Amino acid sequence: MIQFHLSKDAAKDLKHLLGAPEPVNYQAMQWYVHRVTIARRKVVVAMEKQSRYALVFCGLTKKELADFGQLFTYWFSINALACVVDKVGEDELLEQHVIEVAAAIAAGQTYQEGYDRSVTAHIRQVVDLLRLFVERDGYPLPVEPRDTALFLMRANETLYRVGKAGEWFTPMEEFTRFWLELFEFVPELSLTP
Image 1 (cartoon, rainbow, N blue to C red):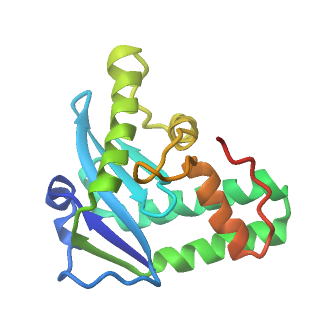
Image 2: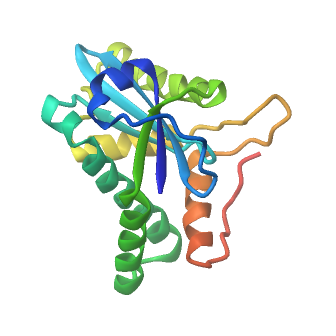
């Protein structure tokens, strides 16, 4: 299950998905969603609370916003698969299992307005990185799947820490660790100092 916490801006575009506020379900993944405008196009950034793993959806149309749950499920599943295959290698049976489990996790989605100061600060860093690429460096907004995947690799390799005394980590390592542990692989990740 996934509990989405929407910023006020995201809630305006995803109001058709909003439900009544619910207490945090600690069994569910907690994703925070914010919407900004870059290069006159709508951009939605979703970030998972524990790993700080980000998914970015650029140039969304009204139809894509209406189908956000399906769009999210697709990208969530593909990113889970990429993390596992990158560490374990290709295995058709495992790959199918990862896709099925990711789809099952994403199948139960609830949406409510919500805010977490720490996650929001990290979302702003992803937005700033995207603005830097588009507005300063002149790259096009990553609306195509390949461009989106390349940007996500860059954004999720950024070093973060939670709190002033927290350990440094990258979202990619933490998200990968989640999936490897879920499938009972021992994660041998090189944690960045």
